[in-house]
Length: 246
View (cartoon, rainbow, N blue to C red):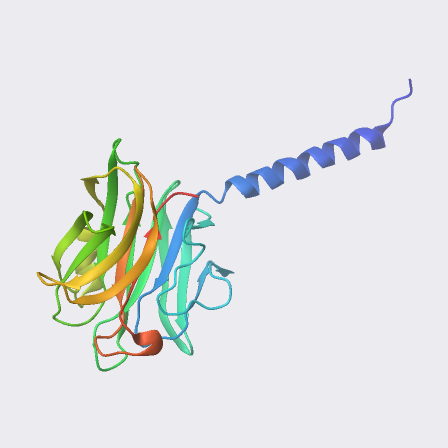
């Protein structure tokens, strides 16, 4: 059998290509989520070191990715994060992200009468909760003094109040971030529940969602956003983000 240098060269070259492709794929080992919680900004775009992390533009009350998989895979390490609304750059900052680290960037307004967007950056704790539990957090992004109770409701007899007297998260995004990094655990057996946000201590309904499935050991972020007297895209709304790893 004759020796063919070109054959071995091509085989080696193919191996290098395969290894490089594997390395490139495995380098996307962190996750990023973007949520447009602003009542005044109809669309957002975002980039991670020059690569788009949302397809097209992100409308009000919408999260990146999908409802069940909102985190977009991105490279860990130091990367430039850019968030843009129209002609305005809301964030243009280098951040360091560790392997298997998940970040949320939430855009919200600090005023109910004029556009005043801020960007809240959260490093999310996505550790799986114990058996027969659910982990959650509530982000109250409506710039008003109203306080809310957040409920999961299954029929008339099975209701779970997740959070009571929740207040607007505040105007200083940096100062409030630490309190929103983690999630609260509560006993839960799973099932189909509607979501209701009510004026605290009353039955006055601010926003709701029809019944959907909530999983045992699930991790969920409930986002209350909009403008108190807003209409259309700026109306009060509640969204549910299933905060699971990809």
